[in-house]
Image 1 (cartoon, rainbow, N blue to C red):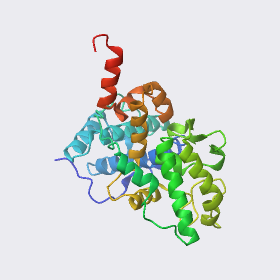
Image 2 (image 1 turned 180 degrees about the horizontal axis):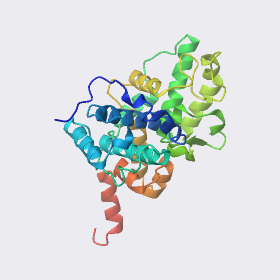
Image 3 (image 1 turned 30 degrees about the horizontal axis):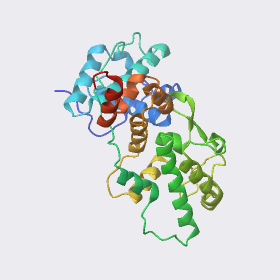
Image 4 (image 1 turned 60 degrees about the vertical axis):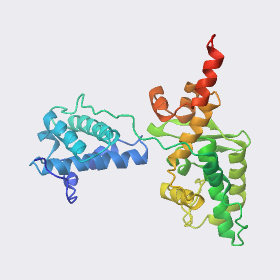
Length: 310
């Protein structure tokens, strides 16, 4: 019987695994990726420790394959297992360079990522509820409440209008906004920078927020470069964005749905798939193909225009 993960004893923090040093090699990765990779390696180390394995030098390919099979029996999605396999490949390459292991048992270690689960495309009504807010809501008298509403407007308009990842929106600095030129520059996955257009509503919402709301929300601990601030005057976080969405709609909505809806609407409007790839900041076109879908109406429209017998 395979060992269970059980209570996290955090064996991965033992000196032999050197996970802190491993994390230092992930400097160009997004913070969420760093946290996920650390957790993935620590979880594997804890699982392996219950079989008597106390360091990376005692791990072989068979043990890694057993671990991936164990994850499958525990009901993990294929995409999650594939990410964990990627984290282990990255870690054991580090372990070999570090001299913690004579060989790299994770070479060619793969796990099918499957199709994954994509957020559904928001309906026009759901999108309007998020971007416009309750129609009957009066203008709040409290300056901080008014400032919060202006911030929420700007965040949601930017997520949908420019297709930003939540992490990119939260990490946005003031010099990344070019309101006159209508563009926003963000740092995406892998430390890659890209500049994307802003919609007129998002540029207008950001302008109002910066002029009228940010000064109200700022405080002693406010990072001077941060665009979006939370109620404590600190840089907005992903959990804050979830709360913004929860306040605007009663339908459970994942923040990523705004980005997915952005991409889908571009394709529905006739945008080239490679253009959408650039706008989203995807390294691979295959990622864009999995991430978006083309509506049945557009497929029919392309067929009627392109096929001589349509």
